[in-house]
Length: 96
Image (cartoon, rainbow, N blue to C red; front, side):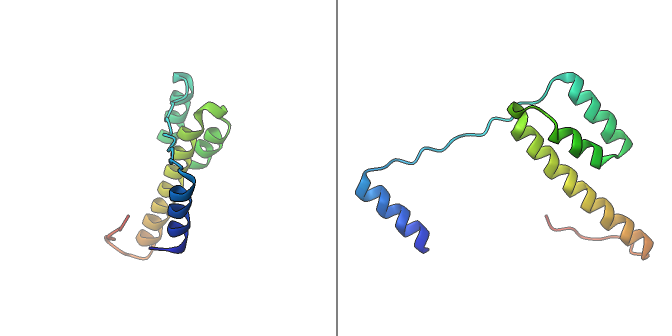
């Protein structure tokens, strides 16, 4: 057990604490925004999707955060594919 866990468990024990975990709720933006993101995705414009997600209202923070993660992953995957094609690599095993 690491030191942080020991300290936290000690605090719980001596201060009679109870940990409360907050659940993140993924709230999708309005349909018009989803349609715009779909159009951008069909064009393969990950940068615009990321920029669009960053401009969404605060209530969609969880949604936009997940979307930004996906665009980063997709962009990396696309770059790897382009690199492999340009170097004559036929297939690549990805561990995610």
